[in-house]
Length: 342
Ligand SMILES: *Cc1c(COP(=O)(O)O)cnc(C)c1O
Image (tube, rainbow, N blue to C red; front, side, top):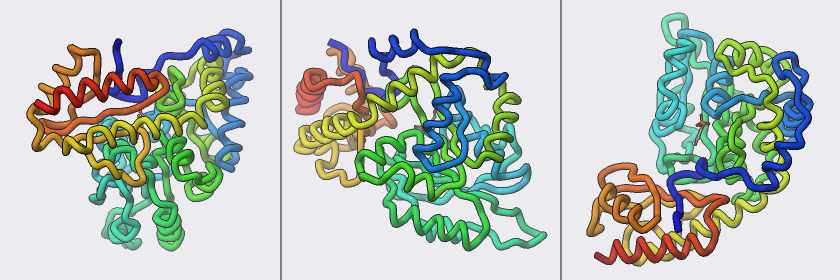
């Protein structure tokens, strides 16, 4: 048995999803003629209470289009120092769009609105202009942490008071919505732009959606083309996303429960906190006192069919998802318990 806990991106399309893809009506989306993509964009915009949306090949492209819509070359973005935007996107904001970025530290990814506020520069012709703030929900490197709604509301107030825009990297906003019970439209109402992934916990093979005003999405469509992200009969991919929204959203609660089973099982071994409040489908291991370091543990676990990723010499990450069932989870717990007992 192989239990792949490296990421929630490793899921494969289910039989039902493949049928939906097979049946999808398609057209040339660069001409705006793919009915399935048009339907997906309308549905996702409505879910977040925004005017419009844009289907893009990846979350990175969704984030980067949003940033260039909000921040001009030589102007500034503020985000947290562990953000996906500054960690895993190959410096795109600087390399492609001339955006200057400053980061604020965060505890497990949770945004501190006052720390953001302190970084916003008052308009002054000597000084770089701060144009946008970005926040990640849930927070990947923070361990799938859900941003408290009160903090997000405070960030919105900070943005309004200072005239800067607010972007959400919502690759896993679905997990936040299910875990915290916050309506998607409530999240949508707090941000000028949101990028949401269909290919993480929702289990679609490809695709993200950028959500914003109609004017921003019209301009975003132009930027997507510039980046080579204009796709043709990609309705087969949009169909997977629409299927995922209908069938795989509520079940994210199962992933969260299984992640908690993992935490509870491993906590007595001193490698993770059993009570990881406000977390979702990601489990971070602290292997400081473990008999094996992270690469050795990962290699030994792999031999027994359990895959996960070290995040450092003495730290690792396990992610639950659609393709990990109770039997798989039990196997992972058995193998890890065995190896960590030494
Ligand atoms: C996965 C992810 C993205 C987008 O990644 P792609 O691989 O480009 O689709 C963006 N933000 C976060 C927090 C992510 O975890």
